[in-house]
Length: 242
Image (cartoon, rainbow, N blue to C red; front, top):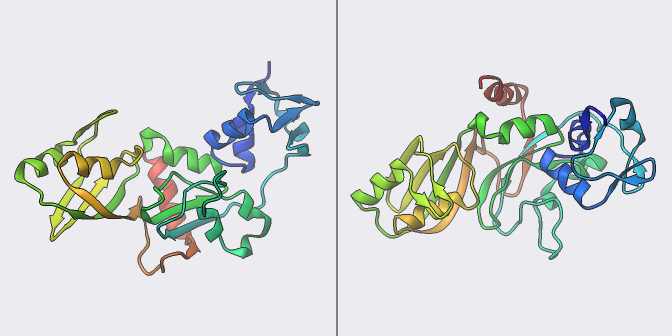
């Protein structure tokens, strides 16, 4: 038995987050010496060059890349979609060349949610950013239908109990003229919409305006840009501090 999980090796090579690499393995796309790799299999480090993905030898990614996208509504956050819906990968610039196929989104935004979405081929950083212990802040701005009562506001600030358990109290809840701003450290599926629904508010539009130290200020909807050196340094620092 080797000392390195195959999904970890693939992630380090830039094939996606460990979760994404687990999906690749579960789909039967990875082999070693002609035998399919199963989820949980371990290998020796010297076997990494002998791994094959879709019948072709795996190889290290080119230089790591980090992009921030201002996601429009109507795009699903996935690398590919069996239903043929537009995906966020359709918005990756052509200058990524073959690297575009290995860039992947860090986390998810719902199809109808807009705003900041980070892409990278750095599996290690993605794993650290998404790990619950990192508690990276996400700031959302929601346009809502309905009025926030005093009791509802207290519930939002304490963290509503959802069908999958209580939520952590947001670091910030701000209400003004049909708009609710929330800063969360959790990242559950459709969490903001469900939190608002729990206090009688219908979310009409939802935008993520900040992820950690990154913002979409000045970035046109549907476009993306590379992170600056200081932004990348700050993003990595968020993980190192915990």
